[in-house]
Amino acid sequence: MPLTFRFPFIFIVSFYFFSFYNPVYSQPDNTFSRIDSLRGYLNSNRSCYDIIYYDLEVSIDTRIESISGSNEITLKALRDFNRIQLDLFENMIVDSIIYNMHPISYTRDGNAIIIDFNNSVVFNQEVILKVFYHGHPVVSQNPPWSGGFVWARDSLNRTWIGVECQGTGASLWWPNKDHLSDEPDSMQISIIAPEPLIAVSNGKLIENYNLPGNLKKWIWKVTYPINNYGVTINLGYYSHFNEKYLSNNSEYMLDYYVLDYNLDKAKSHFKQVRRMLESYEYYFGPYPFERDGYKLVEAPYWGMEHQSCIAYGNEYQNEEYYLFDYIIIHESGHEWWGNSVSTKDNGELWIHEAFTTYMESLFIEYDYGYNIAINYLEDQKAYIENMYPISGPLSVNFNDWDDSDMYYKGSWMLHSIRNTIGDDEEWFSTIKKTYQHFKYQTISGNELINFMNSQVDYDIEPIFRNFLTNRNIPELKVKMKKNKHGIKLTYRWKNVNNDFNMPTKVRVDKSDWVAIFPGIKNKSILLKYKDKKEVEFATDLFYHAVN
Image (cartoon, helix red, strand yellow):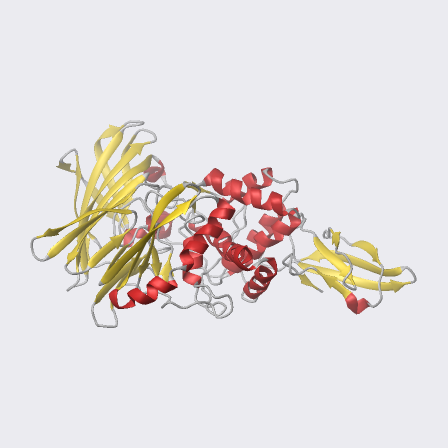
């Protein structure tokens, strides 16, 4: 997901306080409603089943800015039940719910739909429900930072429509089990819209055909698990071009849908996609959605990481210094971290954003070299605020991030762990193994950290936990005392968890770096010196302040 400001453009997302193992909420006004709990908590009416398949059909009425349609939901019982919860915003009207060819009873509890079955559904039984609905979906007031439909006009005053819903929830526009932990194994998305608009969605285009009333139906098929907020639709006066991409002896399509008057510009600008894919595949393995292909779709907002259908709205601009398009590089990185490896809970979106923001520096390192990547990371550091911990509260659909630290501090957390390990071969092997181990899964922060910790020789769990739960920048308190043998450096960590074990490095007069391992109690080391002012700490390798 993009932020609101960065170098030169950076995004904003918000954060409250969540203690990694024992939630402690320190933010004032940190209250959660019943609606938050119904969305964010896996209560017994949601934990009793697993989503297998969605067959979503949506008809778009561009004149009155409304939608109507249905979602046929295939689910599997994880235990016996006679009641379940689905989700659809209260402003959207449920027309009927069909089970076994007959209407089934349901009630509303705010944005939740509670469905009662006449007979118990038993363990392992598959159930198919079809929900018919219509209404005027929430309109985004500030896309992509607020969720909803975007009813826009292109520069020729023609209809141009998009939707994004990260955080706000996919149930603002279609009925589903709106919890990040449960993704369908696959999905079909059908869009009915007036001609000559072209409708683009996730996955691979199966077919399109004309309907009465100057309408056209577009059918898209997703053949991988997909998170709900990654599901999207785009409508516009698009031109389409594509190319084949060969990678690791496999081949898949790169498809681009751009406003017709931007076709020539896009053909030139999007050449950087191939280099981006090459670099990310080098570090993490093949593009995760080869069967569905890779798409960039021009959208009437800045951007969003919709799976195999990246929303692009950066007006064909490259970063001034690094000469790449931030939206292409960042949002496409989410195909690995966010879409393939997905968090189970909004409070741990750092799994998506920290890794993807760190991927930007890896792209730089792959393309321009290590030293330029360090410069890029230093640029990121300028936007770390240290206002709240990177993790937020769980099970409440937390979406009130007030800073961008899960992006930039998260990136520096990973960079610091890389240098803690101190062996790039081990580090790059670890992050690749971690991605490969969890691809196509939803995971928790604990699962990710425990796996990474099992792959390395150093205990990196306390470093993760400190950055995730402690809002403060680690501060290295130092005292230097000159004697006849050199300079006695006394040091300790301040503003850290008691078990924080990140090392750092120090050197004198550009000599070789010396690793030190501070704790919360004073330690000391004797350094040969010429002048106290020539003592230098490796703050380009580890995220900390020096006092």
